[in-house]
Length: 154
Image (cartoon, rainbow, N blue to C red):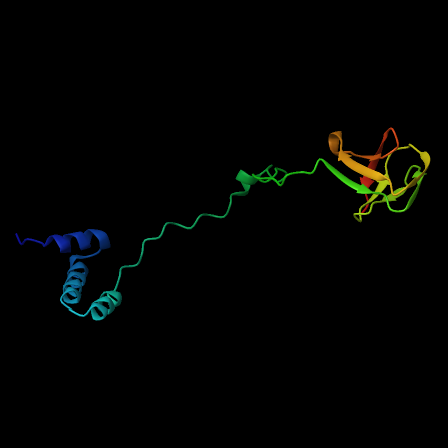
């Protein structure tokens, strides 16, 4: 029984093909090894025919069944939520009534969402909008002792 060189056997296993292809590749590698000039040797190795790479199967498109019901979930690393925004009400503030719009100096406009009203004479008062329960927002105005429920208009 003929002896198969170790390199040929190894190449046969790696290539998974017939021994003749492995033998041809082994002969080509030996020829490249004998070249003295480094650039020529590298060019020789680069020119060797390589077997088609075995690729892992591409991941299948996300299974809709797996994603079912997760549409409303927040991303893994949500952005930090602000607890409050502080600004000033522009100009003279005369108070509010249900549905009034209150414009802040940061460009935000808030609409009074509850049925409260109040009449005050303030100039550029400090205003703080903060989060409440169940998605509500409340406006506190400096010099006024209670909160107004508001919704953002702009």
